[in-house]
Amino acid sequence: MYVCICRKVTDHEIRDVCREGASSLSELREKLGVASDCGKCGKLARTIVKEYAKSAAFVSAV
Image (cartoon, rainbow, N blue to C red; front, side, top):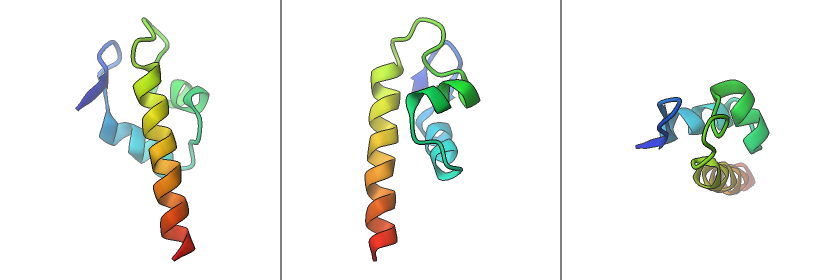
């Protein structure tokens, strides 16, 4: 699904960048341009980053 319409960024692209080490909205903005135009996608993008961090912590704990 598209998260950032302005930059045509999907949730899959955000998760891929998180897998590469991004852990904040500012890092996503730097790499993908998320939330740098109208900013309406910032909240959802931040939520995806947090969800990814939780799932990564759970996987690495196993």
